[in-house]
Structure formats: structure tokens, C-alpha cells
Length: 413
Image (tube, rainbow, N blue to C red; front, side, top):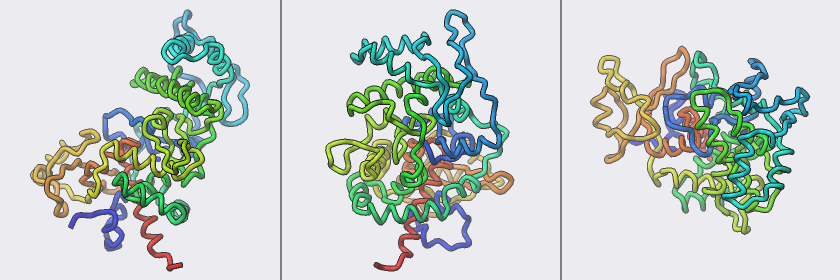
């Protein structure tokens, strides 16, 4: 029998802990480093695959030097050194971004392409601060750090999130049901994402979005993907300014994760402009203050990114020690591309699966403990478009299932 979200609530306790998919302010430090099985670029919604507070907490025990990386060594383009005086936590260092040649070019483009007033942009960047915290938090964790699904899972499937999820579901059940009916995304998946991202609005981020995104747009750490990531963040900086203008708000009022993600669902500014919806019908989109808008926007985002109404998410499987052709199915990107027959021929065994579907093989490494293997459907990969971590997608579905189970155990009112 296919394993679905509701089916998993009745599975025997003797089955492995992750028998369902058993994170920017709520994702743990591991959301990026612990799951790099895929080579695909990060999704629009979660560029760093981690969020501010959890990663910042982890980094405290392993704090790196504040020295910046990736600086241009050409004297003609050399940026002014940041002053050593640092403002209170999360407020950044005082620099004059208007003196940076790349920022000047960006302002030129914004004036020409979008009709912004140069003087206003100059005034805005004069207020913007350099966030070395964002630089340190977005750096990849050491590759020698072992991946551990059980430890990752424990950060999210806990009493705090489950209880908060039950309260959230009870409060916004009508909106959740409407989102499921309209977009085909199960209520527990929506609940899982908002719970993993921000603990239902409790941790939406304290960084000024302008500070975080400007810093990453023009001084991203020196990594192999540096140029592509700076281009991404420059696009998000443009979207931040356009979003603020469209909504007639001060861009400096936007606060979010260290990577610039905003609100209950932690959408990047570009995702807000493209995928967020006015689900509460008040005539505006407000992911910072409207949980109902957040619910509809999460469901819309997943629907646009491949969610298939009524299909399951993943199935636990075993892999053969003798026939190891299945190893060639690992690390094949965020796509369900194999038939059940192909997977069985490669040495993968699992439950009877729906006909006509395709799958991908997901490995959840557990440090020194045995690795868990799952057949993932297109719906699993739709979740990874929110955040490209396998661990993240499993945590979302597992938290949603746990909240649903806890809610079902509540006595009738």
C-alpha cells in the first residue's frame, strides 16, 4: 500500500524513526551543509538553505574570524575598509556603500531600468550597513562535518514546534483547508513549512533586509559559486527596492533572515513579488503580519513548482548489498526521473507503488548509523524547490505529519 501522509500516522512504532520524511530564521545550521547531494542551484526562496538565528547559534561554538573574504585586490576597484566600530547585534558595520564602484553601477542600472531617483538611492545606501554576520553565516560548513539526519530531524520535530503547530492549525484551519482545495497542497505540508521556517511566526528574523542583501550582493564569500550568488543577490536587491516602492514602504523597515528572507514563510523579495498572494482578501499582500497570506502563498509557491494534487511524497526503501546499480541513481538532481521497474532492476526494494509515477532515490545519511533510503516523488522535489535540502524536505513532511497526529489526539471541544 502506498505510504501517504495520513497513512504514516498509523504505521507501527517499530518502523524506523523517519518513516515519513522522518531549515530564513528557523532553519538549522545544517540545512545547507548537511545536505549537498544535489548539484542544482538553490531555489529562489531559500538561497542559503539556512536561516539566521539557528545557524548563528551553532556558529557561536565555532566562531570564525571576522576577516572578510573575496575582496577585489585591484587598487582601482578596492573598496573602502569598514570601520572597526560595530553597532549593536545584527545592525552591522558602518561603511559608505556609495563609494563602492559595483554599487554605483547598480544605482545607474536602477535609475535607467526602473526610474529610481539617484539621490534617493544614494541616501538609502548611505544608511545601509555592512553585515559581516551575514558573510560568516552564509559560508558553507566544513565538508568534513558528517551529515546526520537524526540530529537534523531532532531540531524540528520537537514538542515546541508540534504544540505550536497544533495551535496554528486550530486557529487557521479554515484558511488551510481553502488553500488545500485551491492549490492541491495538503494542509500538513503547509503547516510543516511554516513551522520549520519560523516556528509559526515566532522567529522571522531580526536583520535589516537591505543590510543583508546589499552585503551579499557585493561582497559574497570567496566560494566557487561567488559570481553567480552575487548576481542572485543583486537581483534580490533590485526586487527589494521594487517591492518597497510597489507597497509604499520604507525598505529599511523590512527585517528578515541573514540572507534577506521575509515573514512567516521566509520568502525572498523576488519570491514575494512573483509568488505571494493576497489570501485574506484585504487588498494587499503582507507576509510579515498576515498568517493567512502566508498560508496561501506557501501553497501557491509549491503548486507553481510542481506539486501534484493527491500524490504521495516519499516511500521508505531498502537497497541491495549485491546489486549496487542503485548507487548510480544518487545525486541526480531535484527531479523524479526513474520508473519503479528501473529502480527495482537497480537493486531497490519497497512497497507497491502507484502505476505511472516516477521517482528519485534519496539517501539520508546518519553519521555512523545506517543511511536511510527513500523513493521520492515529484511532490518531494517540489518541497526542495523551497529549500534544496533533502533533510529540509523530509523535516517539513515529518513535522506536518506529527502536528496532524497530535491534533487528532486532542479531545473534542
